[in-house]
Image (cartoon, rainbow, N blue to C red; front, side, top):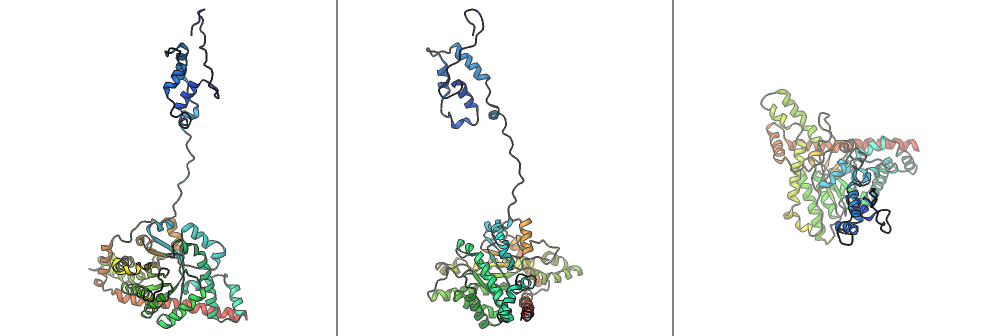
Amino acid sequence: MIGADGRRRESPRPTPHPGTTGPRTISRSIARTSPSSHSGNQGESTTETRAESNGPSGRPTASSLSLTEKRRTVRPPKAATSKRPLRERRPPVKVNSLRTLSTFGQSVWLDFIRRGMFASGELQRMIDRDGISGITSNPAIFEKAINGSDDYRDAIQELAAAGKNNLEIYEALVIEDVRTAADFFEPTYFRTEARDGYVSLEVSPRLAHDADGTVDEARRLWGAVDRPNIMIKVPATVAGLSAIETLIAEGINVNVTLLFSLERYRQSAEAYLAGLRRRVKKGLPVERVASVASFFLSRIDTAIDPVLEELIAGGGEKADSAGNVLGKTAVACAKVAYQIYGGVFGVNRFADLAASDAETQRLLWASTSTKNPAYSDVMYVEPLIGPETVNTLPMDTLDAYRDHGSPAARLEQDLDEARRVLDALPELGIDLDEVTRRLEDEGIQKFIDPFDRLLDSLEKHRAAAL
């Protein structure tokens, strides 16, 4: 302002508001322009600010005009107006494809077991990291684990020294492993209300055609392991179907194994229903009786593909048709099996049992490692993702899917294509029923052979320990 003497003088500064370090009008102006101001002076009007700087008449004084000029030129602190510093860019977190499968209603079980994975923390890591919610085993898996590692050496020597024979040693080893694994999955079992968290133990493959022998051994193994979250594996032979019904009626969980045929799968589902109904008729609870139906996949393509490849190599009118179905039979069977599942366990058929809180018998995709190196290593996982299913994966397939799996609900896609594949087989001279009967017989033998090798090996260890 210009004084009476004609000299320029600074306008008098207003007295700071108590508790502030500068003019209230300026500080509020700054606050209104700062992104961080909304929590402090929010709701205070501009009129209030201006009124405090006006004279008694309400008209702007020279002093207030000067402050207004200052308000126009004052800049907020640099941090308030400059662009926020960019956050450090980090690589996106890779989503674990295995864990994602559960969002589509599919459970992932591990098709492998070995004693060393318990103490090392390997199994717990897979449960925590990958969402593994169960384990399947068979004589071939145990033969590889026991003969292929030192995990069992001390236990074998102790059992031999205690006078156990080779079969007793075998059972003691596998029962302890299954019991220990079941304890790892106990939290899963209770969290899912008995839907998941199971460990499977197979009866002797030499009993595949002996219904009574299967039932007796299943009862004994069930009692020996003494855990609610185990399943006894029973082959889906004609004799096995009878045993399955009996065991379910007794409240023993069953993993129906070695399923290759659509008709045999339907029969196994019916055996499960019959067992539940027998139980309900006796007034016994069914809500904790569980079963899965293990449909074997890769062996189907391994059996049929060579015939198709021969037709392709020979040329002629069947070559193109053979090429169109090459490597597709197993997945086609699985997709059609799932449609059968929907019919058997639909509202019309299952309503009475559902009213008693019974659970459906889920389809479990087994034999999911790719045998043909020309095919995708996750070809028996990707197209078969859908609700109320289980996929049991060997280690290699588990690692592959974690690395490059692409989860999506595909199980009910391409159903017409699946039926076309199956319809084309008879035209190509392939009898699928005959193929699956052969696979059932071969499957039993493929369990008998490692079972016998393991017993022979245990006998040698036993003799050496004496």
